Length: 430
Image (cartoon, rainbow, N blue to C red; front, side, top):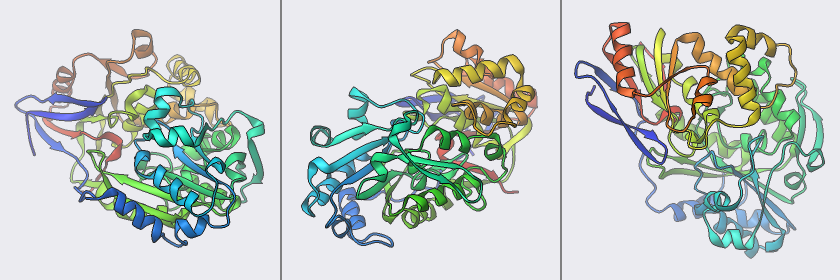
């Protein structure tokens, strides 16, 4: 328990949350994990001693080409740590440098270009020497059609540049994901480099409204099960997964067969990421985990969903997110406009009959989960008046006053504060 000022992640820094003197704050963080003292040595050990696979050097021998998937700018993956060593290992084993490609797994997000791409890759040598492309989910010709999954009939179309590579590696960050359970591993393949029809099927209401499609859950999660089937249809894929602490320092790195290496990283982080909380709160203050996740309102919605298990029904969830790039895609803006015009119930009714979700409307659908529980308020310095009008939530200009008002409404001075937002998953454990 604590009181006074609490720093929460906001943009590239922090925002001080000042609580009333009478408030009793519970600050919810991940359990601390030991930082890896020598990340490069840990990387090389992971590449030399993979999980359920030969070493990267052995995997590379006799191959004629390679494709490495990296997450887009919305994930703070330490690409600068591992890309060059992986590529140099491949070249030393006989793969020509000009036959190695990096593919940014954008899903349906915009491409990462220019200075943003340089920041994403983090290594000038890689930028200068390796071909780097962005996945384009809307380009039909870029994809190989594998048919449909046998369980739920999801159309499976994957970027041809990845499929046709002789050695395929997906890299990423393992963190809670509010629909797929955990990010990283198989998720970097689908939806990362999947066709828009595959992605829009994943995000249809029959998946989104499934009670098992939630953060930190893989058992019976329909998205996870489809992703496992999809990587099996593609064939031999390897995965490199990283886990970071609150300071964005490396605490775990795994490499190996894509499913096994991802499972090992999930096992490592799951017990420290899920935090038991003995009560529910009428006032919850959380963030969008700061940069880069809080660049847009689209990504901000993730932080509105992950703490719902500890929000008292009818309580107030106060979200802080810089939204330095503004709102999000035009499609997301259209979905939010429809939400405001129709209201939550009528908006949801328009989704349930669709086999393919409209692009980016799934994030609006996820926001409905928060609105069903209680009141949502947003503090953001990056949205203009028009953007704020279509958030579908109440926007606030004085964070401290909003907290005090919530305490007064509920007549309960207990406040939960989650500085790292959706990277921490609190759950009610009385």
